Length: 396
Image 1 (cartoon, rainbow, N blue to C red):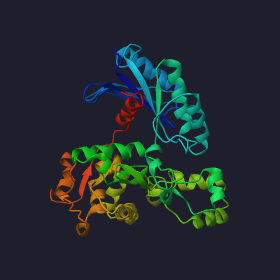
Image 2: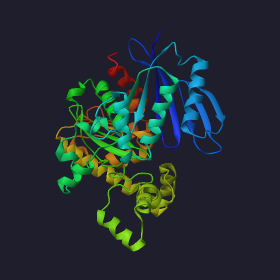
Image 3: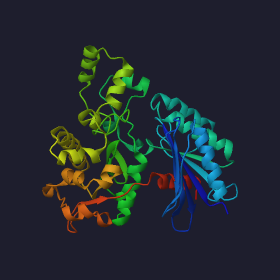
Image 4: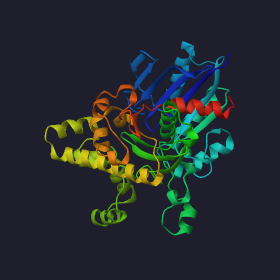
């Protein structure tokens, strides 16, 4: 029976792959894994099922294609995904631009659009394309692309437009696209389900906090604003990205430091954020140092939380009505102290946070039962969301 979906996330230096089985009720996770440090001599290949690690080995992968071939061999030999039970393949693709704004069955036209969008996502769309092409050579199955930008395609012009000359923005497609869309949609749908609110009537602010971080305003089940913009650089403070910054600072630094465009890009995307403030981009280390009295680390924590709190307030007021606030991502799911710093003291806005529940994160509820606005932590599952989108596209 053809009931298996393979989800491929081909990133800049890794390939993740998960297999789901379609059931009458919900998608069932069967197995998944990661091939990491692609292009380095010492790589890692690791697979798991719901309860345990299945394979863990050190091995190098010269390129993404070799990693995907290895996944195919493993999943086939283990019976997880074969020519006999495979239904389709879903791919995470970072950027679809203005032309693709929903999960899409891949054909030559769609692939050419993804190629055009390499200009917007030069680090991510190329390996995404590699994953698509390798899977096409290995499997005679439908392939579906699910785009990080797609969920945010519902943003109105007042939210996605930049105040620069219109002819320039139209010539180059300059607008806020937003990212992490698959994650924001997944946790919002899960929250609406737990609250028994139809998604088409659900208002929420979702905070995806990790090494990359973004926040999204969701009104009646649609993204109406998000903190990341034309690129993932805009918005919140992140592991190595500066987030919002006065554009004049960029021009000033280019003049004073004699920086090329590439050097400026590296400064803001790879050397700033938490790393630039503290020397590390790991929030766990930073919070430990802050607790030990490190003032630079404490400032970084304060800045990170204050920026997130400002966006939360702006989006809550923009929405006017709020059902829930949802934390997700590596920091959002695991850093209770960060959540508490962002969300406490908002009782005047109907947000009654429970510090004890926050520390336990029991059941995902972080607010008192009587709180008009619910606060939740929900583990994101972008791969399952991609698999759901595959079924939607296939009419299943």
